[in-house]
Length: 413
Image 1 (cartoon, rainbow, N blue to C red):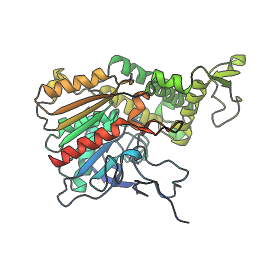
Image 2: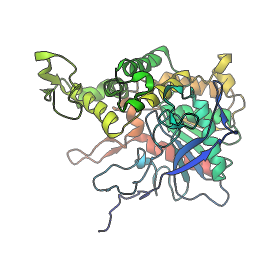
Image 3: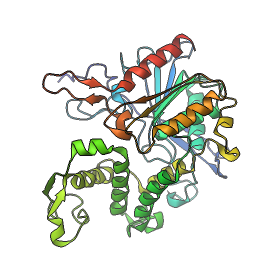
Image 4: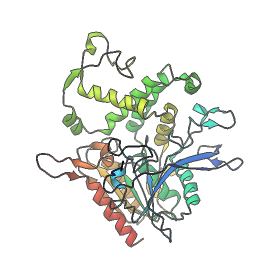
């Protein structure tokens, strides 16, 4: 039977592996010590030009993977979802794979193919668990630089990403000024505020309090801290949606709660006790569902959650000087900074701080705040408004903005 792919899809793709930093050549880590061997899972789309000047590095957010576009072998395109940024990557799309060679790798510390806490420590023969070294955004970027060396790419046309991906884009421009022609950080910050750190702390605390966590050694116990990980995901999802989006999506609608013993998470799904559990708000059911997907379908690793959220909290581009402008002193990139007016997780003022620091160094920068109902998650959503009552679909403005900026950079690198 012939497979029908969506128009503009990159089609079926392969997730590849690259291993480096074999002992005694381990990669040094920012907080001390070394790590090796290191494996990075990555995917590529399009073809690298003969001049090797059309490479675009895509950076994923906190819980993302290397699978940014297309379909994996065995997937049914008519029933299953493509990669997480599929609407942006492909022939004729903003990251046009007929023009650009697009790369996306899973960060170190994650659990989707790259070396992380669930990987086997060659020294012990057991998963690293909490013995996995502290990872920084700088460490993630340094590992990616090894991957680009492996691919024979000396300079990137652009590096682009949202949320934690935006942090990596900024880190690339700062750490490798001669290797980055432009950077597109989206819905991000140069460092976390106390409030942003607090949200991550609550998620980590939920995991640590789960009796199935076993001090990070749950692999040997053959358990998963399902409750804690699910609650952590629920907290995250609250910050991803705007107040307007929640009103539109849920309002104050109520529904009968699922039976306490039904579903995959029946033993812990109820958030209240006794008769108070009989009726729940729709938003409660939605959050429980998202927690279930994270734990059972996506199978995100709890130790990776601890590792990556701490890396995000540690991230501070201003460094020891405390001056953000100083971080950009040697930078040579052009910048497109995008924020969203309903994003209260990474509000626009944080993007403006980055813009001001870049301008103090005389660099080219465009800083745009786009209007959306979606909140922080807007960078992951293709359509601002779906077709309704015969009206045409309203596309996310980010798509055209990225397309135009990248076209200008390619014309005048």
